[in-house]
Image 1 (cartoon, rainbow, N blue to C red):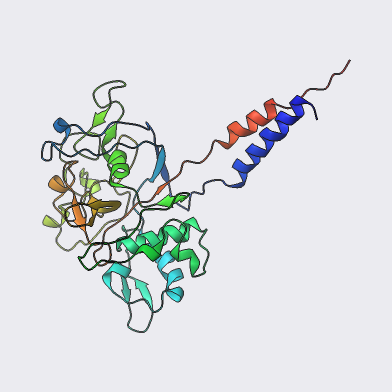
Image 2: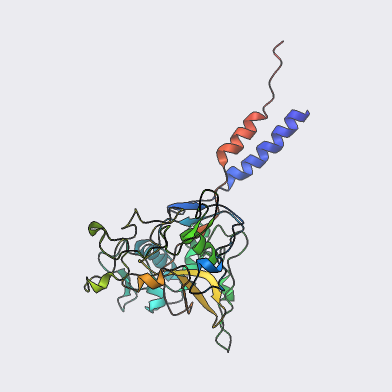
Length: 327
């Protein structure tokens, strides 16, 4: 085998490996978050919490364009029930928009299909496992892959041992830095090529205006002040309100789980506001809440690897094909 043929074989093998294991979309819409190695916040960008340093991420990744919906979570939940050992109707399992009928059945409340789902952090981690494993309906597929659920234990002092996502996970609950970067970081914040962070998750420092989309509103946080009978809205109700990366629903919907612990009391950080909450305050970059990962609920959007540029590998392979001498 000559040099050109050897190079072709090696290149083709490498390309085949890339083609054989593409990163799936898992049925979600994604936005790629670039600028790896970006800096963290500086005090002037987080005036309420000047010592906070957040948002620095050393890798490229994807974030879901919007939050997981009740229908998407319900698909996971019904797949998990047979392997759960008798899943209860506790709110950490069902969230707000799915209910247990008392006879072993779980159902979505009518009209909530496209509302943001809510669940405990641990149930979100199990959903990530199931997705990572290709929605295989076997017990192991819910317990490992993205997260090792054998670490989901609690110590006598109330702290938790839940480990972060495993190396090689193709989908996971984002860290606080990953979520903050997707909502607030702008590579051109202070001008072309001058990066930084905005206070609000729509590429501005202005408070978002609560209101219905058809009335010019920008968020459904605080909305219950004017519409007390409303309980929720569909994801992507404000498609013109987005982060510099094109991530939607950073305000309202649901407060979003992260993988990062709050050092004070070992709770998982949540970022952003939820429907009917104090949006003007909770939307700020320099404000966040910590919640129990087992009993309390939140919304979530997953992070994922960026798919390999398959077309590039095909080009590289094609470029190494030796030409025959026609003389």
